[in-house]
Image 1 (cartoon, rainbow, N blue to C red):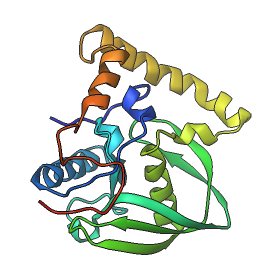
Image 2 (cartoon, helix red, strand yellow; image 1 turned 180 degrees about the horizontal axis):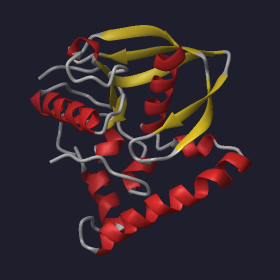
Image 3 (tube, one colour; image 1 turned 90 degrees about the vertical axis):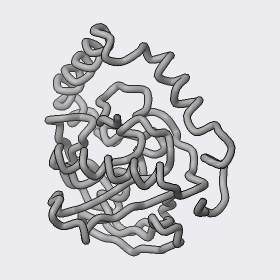
Length: 205
């Protein structure tokens, strides 16, 4: 069963592997991720955040489970262009209760595959642009706290320590294995033939 993991779970610093094949397992994982995202009242969720080391993320800027027509899936995304910049507050479901100002490109162009395996290119701005950049960062192990300047990081530090303490306490209770074991599981995930490749187009089974 998938669950949203919190900092400093090793998956959040793990560089994901591209998706090779869209199959029912992936579709089921994506549906579960949407359910988790809505339950947490979020607008985006990356695979790393549920400890799946694969390059995909989901968005629904309405955060409304009744508006499934607004759901978006980005598989193997690549940001091609970035324009201008803006500083706005961000949060993250893996850092519950933490919000901080993060600089992002105001407009971007992103190339990705949709859930049907079709390659698409999207020009995004404002909130959509910011959400895509935030989630795409997750896929390479980069977190929004990495962008904080010294003052913002000092302000965020107490909450970050609380989140980390909560996770470590869960490990101590046996709810999560030790970091080394978690990392081995990430390394081993999807190693069966056909599940993951280093590069190349997305296919269907």
